[in-house]
Length: 275
Ligand SMILES: Nc1ncnc2c1ncn2[C@@H]1O[C@H](COP(=O)(O)OP(=O)(O)O)[C@@H](O)[C@H]1O
Ligand SMILES: [Mg+2]
Image (cartoon, rainbow, N blue to C red; front, side, top):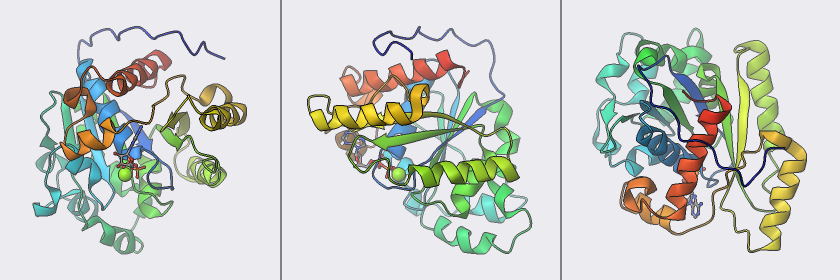
């Protein structure tokens, strides 16, 4: 078991960029910190000089909104890329205020894709196809999945190299994880043999409570060193930062929440899960 208190080295600068490693943020439970982790891990990796692309893959569009993009006013989003074989992702990508951090926005249009994709050829591979032209432009691509195990999430798992599972440090958090792991294994078995679970991230942690500590203990028993030693504490600064449509790393750069996501970024690099 890695030492929970040991820090990870600041990642060495990169000489060039790409090919991207693709990480899907998945948990079919809502409100566990998928979007918050996508935005803030992405921003922290960008601070370390990584070129990061966030794919908003939830019709709610929270990742787009949280990065200051008003996706509900956009005519063309990830939905069009999924449905139009000749659409080019480079025309849809938006830059954010964080240098090196770009986003493919989503809005409610994406909710139609699930139904429309069902009758398509290679319906599980639509997202992988969309991302192919920009793999060499980025070091990491983070996919912010919607809270479901439906066809969109299967697309994310098909495109991904790894899965990061945010898990709320609450009593019933482990309920449902077995089902998620089964879905991951099914995709791995049938479509994407390279896919693996990168790690489990405990979110909304309050180590002052026995409850939180017990949940973390149980998660460690179940998943061993798959659990990141970095944990994300519960703090109102996260909802505050999303209201301000910024990552916490720029909204409150010295806050422990910002430091936690920088530490997670260092841990990913140290584990070899990001350039
Ligand atoms: N560590 C945290 N502490 C407190 N609130 C958080 C934390 N992480 C996320 N939140 C808030 O909880 C809500 C759900 O988080 P979100 O990242 O949107 O989850 P998901 O994408 O899994 O649905 C949001 O309002 C977010 O600001
Ligand atoms: Mg979300």
